[in-house]
Length: 109
Image 1 (tube, rainbow, N blue to C red):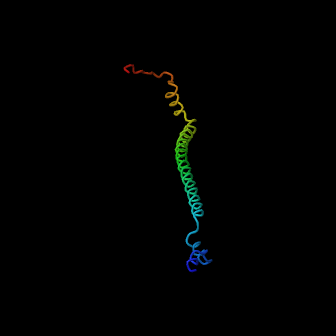
Image 2: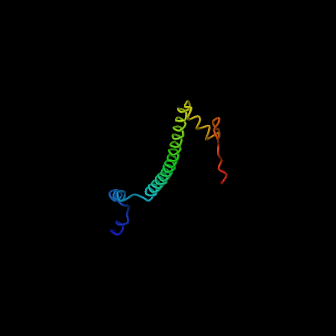
Image 3: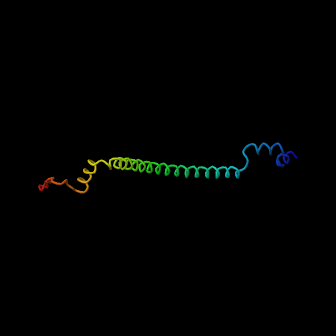
């Protein structure tokens, strides 16, 4: 009869011991799937952060360029009432000359 005693169902203490040892494979698979999903989400977030940082750098460069242009325009606006500045602009941009002024052209080029 002792041979049969070993083949009987495990006692409640043995069942509790088995549960404490690690459970089944289903919880482990669910945990693994959850970890994989979290990892994939973290990688996606990292890519979004990289794209946002690149866009931030581009926009910062554009902002600096625009600020330089604004400073230049502000300076030109301040000088708009200065007759010497207006005369310089007329000479450089419109190829104008003052009355009685002689213009020499370099034809060696």
